[in-house]
Each structure stands twice: as C-alpha cells, then as structure tokens.
Amino acid sequence: MDVVDSLMPYLVHLVVLYVSASVIYLVYKFKSTAGTRNLPPGKKGLPYIGETLDFVLASRRGTPEKFVTDRTTKYSPNVFRTSLLGEDMAIFCGAAGNKFLFSGQNKYVTSWWPNSIKKALMDPSSVDNSSKEESTKLRAYLPPFLKPDSLQHYIPVMDIMAKEHLDQYWSPYDQVEVFPLSKKYTFALACRLFMSVEDQDEIEKFAKPFALATAGLISVPIDLPGTTFNRAVKAGRQIRKELFALITKKKNEILEKGKTVASDLVDSMLMDGMTEVEIGNKIVGFFIASHDTTSTAITFIVSYLTDYPDVYNKVLEDPEKFDPSRFEGNGPAPYTFVPFGGGPRMCPGKEYARLEILTFIHNLVTKFKWDKLNPNEKISYIPSPIPEEGLPIKIQPIITII
Image (cartoon, rainbow, N blue to C red):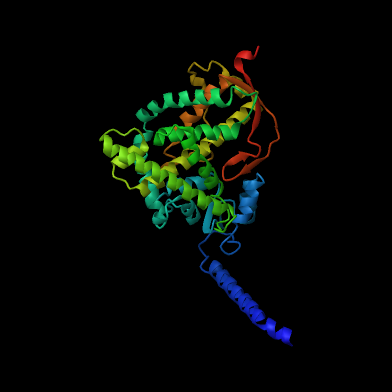
C-alpha cells in the first residue's frame, strides 16, 4: 500500500500528460482537416514535424524525388499538400506548376521563407519582417552589381582566382576531391567580390559556420542541443558575429578615409545608409545563393564530363575560340528545365553564376584530364546534391598527355 501511495503522484502526472497529449492531438487533427475544401489533396503528417523526416530521409538516401512521386501518385500529378520545416506547404509539379508559379507572382503567390530558415540565418531582430519585404529589398539592391558592365569587371578576377586555385589545390596532387575544392573556390570568390576579403584565415572564419548553417537548413526544425538544426542556428550566430565585426571595420574605414567610391558590395550598402543588421542579412543571402549551388553545379559538370567523353571532347575542342554552334539547338520545352527559376522569380544572379562556372570549367579542361575513382558514388541531398565521398578523381596535366 505504501508503494502504491508513493507512486500515486507520478501516476496522476502520467494520466494528465496522456490526456493533455490526446487533447492536443485531437485539436491538431481537427484543425488540419477543417476548412480543407479548397486545399490540394495531401496530409500534414506529425504535429510540428509534419513530413520533414520523410523528406530528409529520402534526401539522405539520394532519392528526394521519391518523396514527390509517392505523393503525386497517391494524391495528384499536379499539386499536393504537405508540411515541411514546421510550415504548411503546397507542392506544384511539372511544367504547368512552374508556369503557374512564375506567372502568378504577387497575384497568387509571393516570396516566402520558412521561419526555421529565417531563425538559422537572419538576425533575431529582423525575423518578424515579412519574407516578401526582405526578398523585395534584396532583389532591388542586386541589379547594379549584376549588370553586364559589373560582370565584365568580375571576369578577370574570376579567371585569376580560378588559375591560382588550380595551381595551389590541384596541380601538386594526382588525386583530389572535387566538391570540397569547388566550394573553397566559389566561397573565396564571393568573399573577394562582396567583401574584399582575401586572407585565407579570414575566409575560414566564415566558411566553416556557413557549411554548418547550410547543412541544417533542410532538417527537422527542433532547436535542441545536438540536433542538426541547433548546429545551424549556432553557426548562423557565429556568421553574424564575424560579419558585424567586418562591417564595423569597413564602416570606420569609410569614415576615417572619407571614401566616396565603393570597392565592394558591403561598402556600397554602408554608403547607402543601411544598418549593420540589414547588411548582415543581405550578405548571408548573397553567400547562400552565390556559392553553394554553383559549387554543386561545378562538381556535377566535372562528373558528367567523365561519364560522357564525347561531350568532354567538344568542350575541349578549340577552347580559346568562340564557336556559335555550341549554343545551337532549341533546348527543352518551356517550363520543363528551370534551374534559375523564371518570370519575376528568375534568379538575379543567373549570369554571375554562369560566368563563374564557365570560367572555372574553362581553366580546368585546359589544364587537366581526369577520371572518377568511384563511378558508383552515392549522391545525397543536404539540401543540394552532394557526392558522399566528395567526388574523388585522378587528375593528369594536359601537357603530359600524348
């Protein structure tokens, strides 16, 4: 009897906890099914987590498309409803879906970032700002730095840095891992062009936390010690700390030297009267957009040039000569291949990315020939596609090939 009496408070707590959890689940279930008459077919999954775990697991296994195809088969080939990253979402599929989104900007849809991504990357004081407002400001500020005249000035810098990178990190070795090296190149280039940072130690202060932050963007948004999302939030904090120190330093230099001509993106923002927080948020966005996806593109170009030697031979043929035939062909059908988005959602850095990739690949194919060490390497998506072993290749200088 004494034992039962001593356990009674704990049993009461367990019953209360069970009843509370049941009530919360029933309320969630009611809300998730109420008012769904005009919503696409689908389900929200578990409370808060939604179907994020299913998506993350499919991505880690290298089959993120299975998450989509399973639901298009079950619900609709055009659109389905789900819950990812703690947010309710509708996923549009196929060319018709792309056309609807690109033509419906600010009419049916608007720019939006999940709160988990804003929490990981943005300053806490601006997390409540609307995604549309932040996106509009970001897009409005970019064009002067991405217009043809500006891009023309970037090409020599891209070319020099590509040559230096290959000489330092590729030439001394007969085997290299493409993905980490391409990230090193694209990140260093962004540091140089956006912030005038060239010192390798300074670059590393940003590179390491950026890697942690991007790895946690597509994860279950539970901010508890040891979780991927928690590491992303901490990394975001470290990025902002380093950025604010750099911005303050550049601000003092402008005031002390009376600078009137901006030498980079940060200078220009300071001269336009932006606050440190505004600049920090925008620079983080620029870095995510400018280096993570381009390094992935470079990696897979290197991979596919090995898989398709006939394409490699065309790339290598007369690399110093402009050949219009390389741009011939009708290309894919409209709205079926949209790596840079479309309409008002077209990536403003499209030409920057193309030039960065082309400049690097030009230098690479004129300097080396290569073979993959593991032709069957598995691909994971976290969030961009990544070769699990970093795409190790055996390289051979062109000059030694007979």
